[in-house]
Amino acid sequence: MSDNPKSFHLSPEMHTYLLEHGTAPDAIAQGLIAATNELGGISIMQIAPEQGALMTMLTRLIGARRAIEVGTFTGYSALAIARGLPEDGQLICCDVSDEWAKIGIPFWEEAGVRDRIDLRIAPALETLQSIKEDGAFDLAFIDADKPNYANYVEELARLVRPGGLILVDNVLWMGAVIDREASDDNTLAIRAFNAKVAADDRFDCVMLPVSDGLTFLRVR
Ligand SMILES: C[S@@+](CC[C@H](N)C(=O)[O-])C[C@H]1O[C@@H](n2cnc3c(N)ncnc32)[C@H](O)[C@@H]1O
Image 1 (spheres, rainbow, N blue to C red):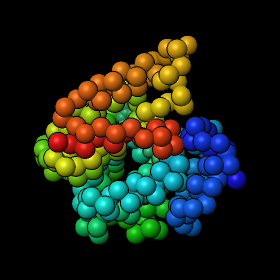
Image 2: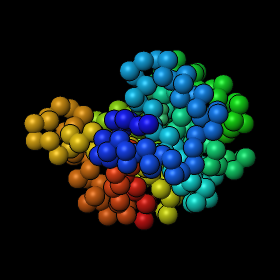
Image 3: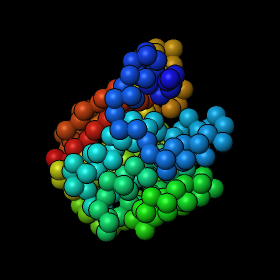
C-alpha cells in the first residue's frame, strides 16, 4: 500500500507497484522510518525509501569515497549514502538540529556506518564555508532550507570534484513549481534555483520525478 505524498505524480497503485519491484528497506532502515514516524507530521521531511535505495546505488556507482549532506533530520538519507561508501569512506552531515539527528545515531551504529559519519551541528552554509578541501568530495546531497539551495550549490561546486555528483531534493515541491497561484518564499526559491542550475554551464543537469523531484548536477 502506498499513498506517499512525496510521489504525488504517481497514482497510489503505480507507486505501490514501483515499491514492490525494488530493493526493500531492511530492518534497520524500517526501524529508523518507524522511529521518525513517532515524531508525527514532521516525519514527512524524511526521504522516501525508494529514494534512499537510489542514493545508495548512486554512491556505489560513482565509487564515492567522500560525501557531504546538507539537511540530515533523523538520518535516513545519511544512512543511505553511508551504506554506499567504502569502510574508510566519510560523510559530513550538516544540520542545525542535533535533537533530530540523535534519533538516527543508534541506527547508524546498528548498520555499522557510524564511524563514516561526521555530524556537524551548525548552519550548513557556515560548515560548508569552513571546509577548505576543494575538489575532495565525490557526492553531495542537498535537502535543507530551500532559500539557501543556490548558496549551497555555490559551495558544493567548489568542494565536489569534476565528474562528481550533487543531488538536490524537493525540486518539484509537491507540484507548486508549476502552480501559478503558489508564491510563498520556498516555492519562489525553488523555481529560481531550478532555472539557475539548468542554465549553469558548470553542470550537466537532469531533473527526475523521483519522490518530490530530484535534480542531478554532474560537475563538469
Ligand atoms: C527535509 S529535512 C532533511 C531530511 C533528511 N535528508 C532525511 O532523509 O531524513 C531538512 C533538514 O534541514 C535542516 N536545516 C534547515 N535549515 C538548515 C540550515 N540553515 N543549516 C543546516 N540544516 C538546516 C533541518 O533541521 C532539517 O533537519
